Structures are given as structure tokens and as C-alpha cells.
Image (cartoon, rainbow, N blue to C red; front, side, top):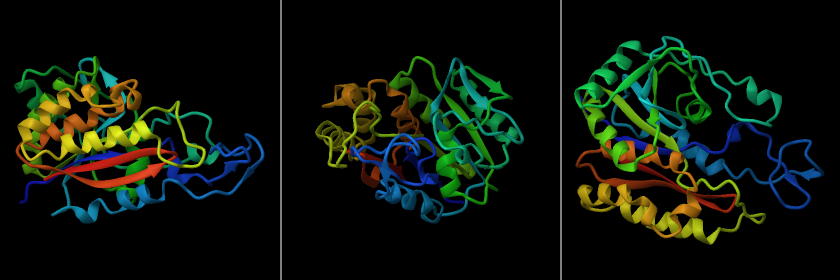
Length: 283
């Protein structure tokens, strides 16, 4: 059995891949019914194509997926233990049909316990979670990546406090799962400042600057140098402009930590509403 890679995927904005694209007459992407509108080019098309190609890019089909989303924080780290996790529609103000999306992927309680055992052996406290549904950082991109919804799926939270170094350590503890047929996916956004958008979809300078610096760190030829740089991500140029709060970047730390000595490569880069967005693969 091959060792599976790890991924950091951009999951888009809300249910973006399942919207009818419209644009306000003043130039901003808005929700239907907000004001006078006209059709406009769907900004998420390239990202959707990337997500649809994830499964084909793997050396073998995983037995299950462990996913960490930027939309769940807990202390201690929480692991979803449900056999049939529901969906958590944790976005607001979108059309009614986007709250009818379905993704009935099975959970994997046995894998959830395996994850907790591994983390416990590494001195990382965990808790089982038996009620929370899969948030949109999971089901929205996975509807494209594994639309048949048959892949067993376990979601794990970020650790409250949002320490980059702790999430690198968390990923490193989980690395053995890669040799056991488990695909580790961090789901977030490499730029996540929702206060800024480009009406013309032209690049926002700070976003492009941060993206270039982040790629340089993630794709370093020395994994130790990479992880040291990620632990200090907020020293990169335009870092806090790009992430006023880092919860959408920290799934990258889990994926990089789990990569071990495998190098990172940028496998997606696109421009959405002025945001320069990247996705990465390790191994």
C-alpha cells in the first residue's frame, strides 16, 4: 500500500459552487434579491475543477478521509465519532436551495477512536463529539471531490488557542495514518479577509504578496525549514492583512505536519474576487 499524500484545499466561500452567479449593477458579487443584478462569470470555476480532480490525483483510493476544517475549534481537540454525521449549515444569508444540500457520507467511529488513541499517545488531549454535524468547510468541497458520498469521513477540530506550532505537532502525530490508507485533508482558505474584495476581480496587492511568500515557505526544499516558517507565518509580508484571524490557515499546518519529510507543492492557484488563493499537496 502506498503512503497517501496530504492536502490543504481551499473550500471557497459558503456554498459558492452551488450558487447561480449574479453581480450587482454597482459591480459587487451579491446574493439574489439584494439589488439590481446581472449575470457575471462564476469566480469559483477553476477551484471547482481542482476539487473535482482530487480523487484522480491519488495513488490509490483511501479507506477513509480525516478532514480538519477552519470552521471548528474546540478544547481539547474534538473528533467526530458518529456513524452517520448530519450536516451543519453554518453559513448565513444564502438562497434556500443551498440549505437543502445533502452529503450522506458515512462516519467511521473506529477510525475516530484510532485518531484519539494516536493523539493521546503523543500527549494531546482529545474529546469525542457525537452530535455536531459536518460543517460547510467539509461538505461543500467534498460534494465536488467525492460526490458519491461513499467515502468514510471523520472530521477533527482545530485546537482552541490557534497555535501554529501546536497544529504542526498535531499533524506530525497523525502522520502514521497515511500508511494505513487514511487521507489527511486540511480545509481552509489561504487568504481569508472577508472585508476586502475587488469589484473588478483584479488582484488585491496584499493578497498576492502574502500568497507568494506563503508558497515560498510551503515549497521549501527542507521540511524542517518549511515547518519553522509556518510556525512563524504571521511574520510573512501582509500576513495579518490576509488573515486577521488564522483559523482558515491552520488546517495547512496540520497537513504540513503530517507530511513528515515529504515536500510541498502548490497544486492550485487562482484569483477569486481579488483574492489570490492557493492549494497545496505534500507527497
